[in-house]
Amino acid sequence: MSYGFLDIASTPSVRAAQAEMGVQEFWTNLPSDRSFDRFTENERTFIGSRDSFYMATVSETGWPYVQHRGGPQGFLKVLDDRTLAFADYRGNRQYISTGNLAANDKVCLLLMDYPRRARLKIYAHAEKLSLDADPKLAELLATSSYRAKPERLFRLRLEAFDWNCPQHITPRYTEAEIATAVEPLRQRLAELEAENAALRAKVASAGNAK
Image: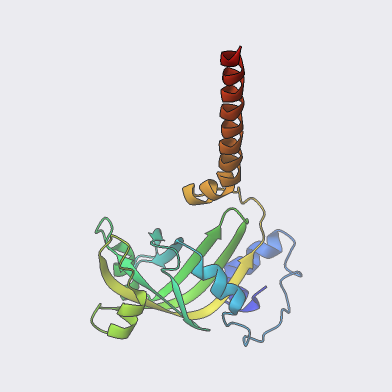
């Protein structure tokens, strides 16, 4: 568990809610060392296998906004143990997240792996970059096979992350994951159909011989 994440999340009102529910002792006197707030190979692998995530921002009026961000698998890249980046593709052109980040650079990301019932929460500071501001980064984040128009780049500086427990996560599967899972059944069905066709042909041949 990342106690750094709880350092940020545990505001006075949160601690009051914990006290009201009788769990304040559980979250008191946690380790204060933040040196482990670095992405390891475990987080790098998990992040690299995602094709979407949810990103929360806050407006000047204090309203939160959560937006789904999607792209090809691995479009959210770990640049180093404290830095993420992704190409921001054109969507409905409301630019709510982009506008919010101009006033407040704090974001919270939620990455889901529904089949394995795993989720990763990330607190970070977001920096918006034009496509020509960092050509090397733009090239790294580009995916030529993905038919979508990138409008900008976002570079995220990690503050803290936390892995959530799998409770209440209903497993869900993508079309590609389902296709992979049923491929052995398809192959077995094809084998049975071939055997059945061979038996039919053998029976028919025996009947004709009489």
